[in-house]
Length: 236
Image (cartoon, rainbow, N blue to C red; front, side, top):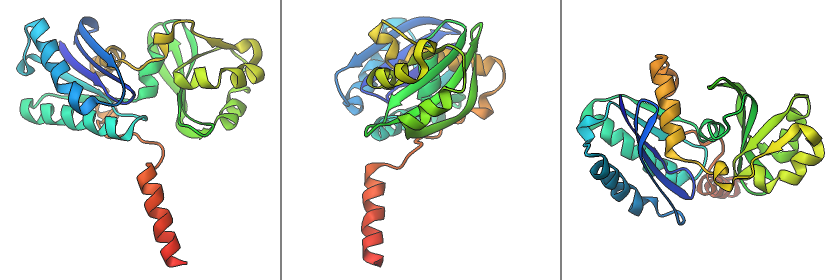
């Protein structure tokens, strides 16, 4: 099964082509939020390097967030267009699940994405021999609220994502020796390989319907917040 996977939810624009869970080609560019310019050329280059075309793809996968509002919309609209043209299935994978795939060790994995102002996007997973099971819900909340949840776990937790870098000291102060962190800076980045691998695992288990390609924002955009404040001021 040939899979085209993309990730545009962060400052990394990543494209991967996989054959089942084997990576054939991966192209990642980390130079800021220029995905509207970089994405299509990267996809074309990936097809050229693999001697494949859009018609050869059996499954499409995309990061559906949380993350950059603009980046998420670019990625989802691109993959949905490919699905409409080819009539092939697609899978939407959360950024938090994609990050969890960076950790290969069995045990608990906490994905954290920095949402600014002491807030994070959060999810907890358990990896059991390559099967990543979500524990609880996706959340967007203050880091102190998240640490209060995690301190009741009483088991070692591997942290991943840029939020684990920003709030490392906070996590270590609360969880002590149960908090584990990666030494590889790239392990905290989102990438299309993990999105494609997760999509393949979901597809082979016939769980596609549980992973629709619809945006997972978890919080309102700045534009929405400003608009609500303006409307509230008008009504007062």
